[in-house]
Length: 254
Image 1 (cartoon, rainbow, N blue to C red):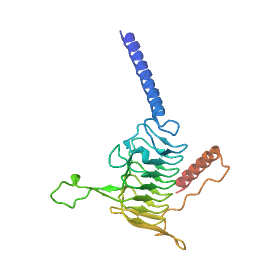
Image 2: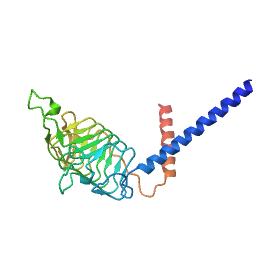
Image 3: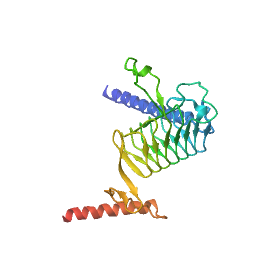
Image 4: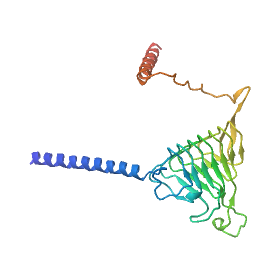
């Protein structure tokens, strides 16, 4: 009897592993087949999808796609919402409403809501869960529920090369310059100059670049050293091993 139990247990374990592998293979196939690209736009009619751009599956809420332009080599992660207009099936006129430049990366679960013009420049990177909107609720009338009052809208622009941290919120009317860093969880409104770091709710400038003095206040950590051209992965691994050995010897000596 123990032998039979072992046999049945082994067979059941093999079946579970086989089913698990099959499910994962199927899931990979679905993610690949359902990704949206210029060659395979799926159910969408984007005004433009640039070459090398990919919307991962599953996509978030997407509507107003004829008024959305996506540049080249963009990465749109899973569950990202992209909308133009307040609701589907509106005629928004001849011009684009939402434009992503080239090389934009939108992190998983982000929302980009454009009821009026919203532009994101080239090479902008967004962490997960970023919320960008051109529209906000109004609460002028104290007798009417806020959700039933007509919202306010204001265009938004995010300059090229900017980095938007996880969970940040970009409010209507925000104008971010080039190479702006927005800290995780910040709530941004108004103008942000080029080469600034903003943090907080509401966000304020906590560091900026000066042509003569560099970053003010100065950076607390040294700038990363780029890898020299021609260095191979094996050489990097050997360097890492050597540094680990050096650190170990220094620790033992102390």
